[in-house]
Amino acid sequence: GQNIDQPTEMTATEGAIVQINCTYQTSGFNGLFWYQQHAGEAPTFLSYNVLDGLEEKGRFSSFLSRSKGYSYLLLKELQMKDSASYLCAVRDPGRGFQKLVFGTGTRLLVSP
Amino acid sequence: GAGVSQSPRYKVAKRGQDVALRCDPISGHVSLFWYQQALGQGPEFLTYFQNEAQLDKSGLPSDRFFAERPEGSVSTLKIQRTQQEDSAVYLCASSLAGAADTQYFGPGTRLTVL
Image (tube, rainbow over all chains, first blue to last red; front, side, top):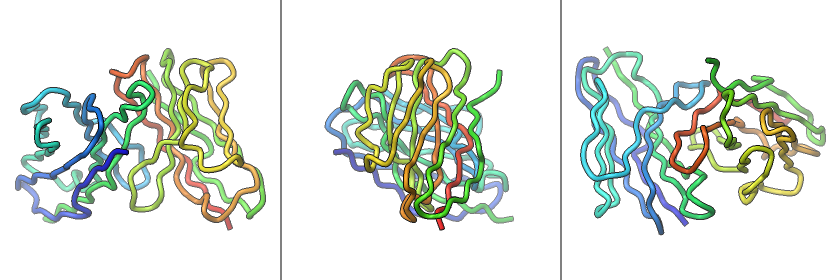
């Protein structure tokens, strides 16, 4: 099976930078996703990494190291609206990599 | 274009009742997924359709759970004889076609079984 670990909760201050880590163990790899989920709302797509390295998209960046089974999501210039859960997910290699396997999510609280 | 929509947004059922949850995927999306999300947890896979074909139902927790997508668009997740442990948010996601495509999620249906 697949195993994904990420911290349960993090706190940070408005305007700061925060890094949310995700480690995974999978029998096959075909990409890692980060989603943002505000309470009571749909998970929304943030980023997708399939090759090693850093992908930057505005205030958000995502990094992947396949050899280490490791990814992080970097959020810069934090805003209050960034308070949400951040979900790390990998594609399950069974049956054609269709389904996603999620971590438990990291709840980020941004304070003034 | 509209995103994935789900109805109802909230459902309260008495234990033993049957419920039906509806998902309208993004227009033109071939693949449709159902996930179950318990409080404080990440979504867990239930089942997957490609058009009208249910290609993977390995995540359905029991034979009380049944999903269909008869015309390859709207999908319904049905839970028979609901139990308290079925209380969760049921998320639907759709993607354009294949394994390489991003899944886009609906807002979910929060089911509470009393």
